[in-house]
Amino acid sequence: MSAAAGLDFAAIKAGKFRRLHGANVFSKLLNPATLHLNARDLGRLVSGVGGSLQILRTWKPDVVFVKGGFVGLPVGLAAKLLGIPYIIHESDVSPGLTNRILGKWALKVATGFPVKSYHDFPPAKMVYVGNPVREELLRAHRLDGLVKFKLEQKLPVVLVTGGSLGAVTVNDVMLDSAHLLLDHCQIIHLTGEADFERVKFELGRMKLEHADRYHIYSFLMGDMAKALAVADVVVARAGANTIAELAALGKPTVLIPNYLMAGHQTENAKQLARVGAARVIDEPSLTPELLAGEVDRILESEEEQRALSTAIRTFAKADANEELARLILEVGASRRHKAGGKDKPDSGRDE
Image (cartoon, rainbow, N blue to C red; front, side, top):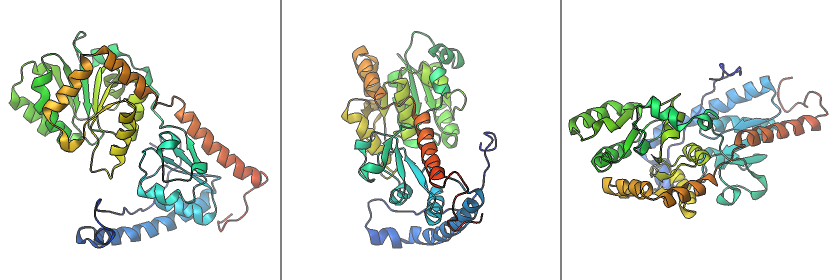
């Protein structure tokens, strides 16, 4: 991806700190299931910081951008040690461990949701830029989806996606609710690659009436824009990027947050639910009847569709790409200006 975009790429080692969410600190640190893995990955983190120091000394950047995730931690720590300003971007309302650590020294914290949604970063550092969305998603037309997926024009379309990896729980409940929906809906179901063959087998065993209206795919890459364009209702997880795409398109949505994701998705979903921007079903409460009922509630009411569409659009930032790029460039230019437009003073780096 980096090479295709004409960007230099360098790999580093990184370690992931595994925690047992809900357990006390002692259990988190000393649990036998995670202790040896955390000890191993601590070594990887130290190695990653060393590798990042070498790379940053070689590249001499004016600014470092960290998106979050455990791979970003050694890069951010290395930038801090070298005195290079860095920016982090937090997509979710509930920050991950990496961004909570790096936020202490970040020059700026770019946020995916409005600043008032966050409580883990100093307000003065935060800048609301939104979550960038691929431009091709905004160009697709409903007709493109009808043709691509061979759909009936007069029947509403329900798009179900558990994210790039899929979601077994969502897949199972969707299969069980199919008989409640197929007499008046068409379904595009993205199962995730790991679960595709199982779902396909189960669907074949069910011998559903109107089974030709149930379209399953493991994952859609180039055609995801068409699937979103044709969807009247979307059933999805509550990842920040998914929400950003749905908001940009104003899609009436049923969110099923992944309750194992350390609260990230739950908190994202709460932000939308508070203002009526999505219908939310907690995963432990998920049943076929409840899911089908929420979908039908939306499909049967144009007023509900308009209300959800209008509310979710308030979470869209059409210029998120430009806002984020502008922030990075401003920080980089400021540092270069302070250095007098010359080579930056030695910060422990090789010149």
